[in-house]
Length: 474
View (cartoon, helix red, strand yellow):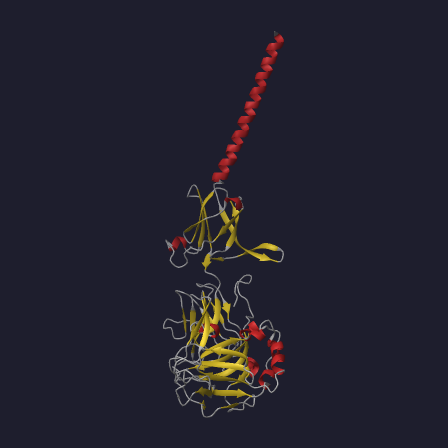
């Protein structure tokens, strides 16, 4: 009997210890669960990191701004228990799977406001972490930007001093300065009157800027005033970007018509159909680059049924190509282009400008036809009546040149027997593919008198990248 009593007491003690242990364990688990749900009583953000890919894998880079759609990492303390992440006042989703007490990942929602921020004094340019108890929060300055700015085109890449040009692109809001090439050229800043610089702050599609008065557009002395234009919007905009280095690229000049018809290539023109001009030719501000070539100068009606070439300007040799900078040779055909300036005083209702590098056989041809739907986007952002603008034709537009370097293209041109190349105006039917369907555009009777100037070969690559990683591309 005594043995049974002792056993019973021992068993009761054992169950008591088990129950006590279970109670301690459950209490500990509840405390951990409470801590996970509610976290510490304090919270702070010490650093914001931009995640980017590197040769060694995904790495962190400290940042003070983030772009819509980007993922950032926050480091700090007390993140366990965060219930809301507000960016510019926008309640932003975050994944608990990537949250620890000292680190968390957040992706900037595409719907995050940038300009129209509610309660701007509290929320603008801020990321705010809030716990269940809304009094426990952490705030850090974080500027939100759209995608990186990018430049697609320049309305006139060989203009005159004091002339307005338009730089086309995306995300070009709130531009704070434009820097033209040349250390002695003043940076252009916006003013209240809009007399020097105007940016499209609503849609970010363009920047209009006046060329500085001391910008040298005529001579290539030390090549100091040619290269890239820098567009800056670091303060209130989306960052800094750069145009291709073809602005005022006079070292690629093939013909500027300043020395008559034999300037570079023993060239000649059809005097009955064209004229070398030295006047304003209808330009809005009266500026022009000296002599230029006016096609159909007698305003003859050009039939809509003839395919005859009109106003032929012929370069009998390729000497100009031989003298181009060797820096172009290693670039592929997508990164080198033929450029020339065009001005037409009339509405361009029909007719096209053709560049043919082998006139005898008709091979290696590129066409500019702004009256054809979709064709304008191939080589220019658009025809502007009465103003000089630049047409850019990448050499990749010629099938035989695709995938080749410009050095190889020069070799092809040098191998042509009795080489004759040139630029001319004609009025013939055109076809273009729209939405996957080939569409024919019938030529119309026309009397337009387009003018051309400054035929040159230019690079299309961007030399300097701005911002983190490779966030700008042309």
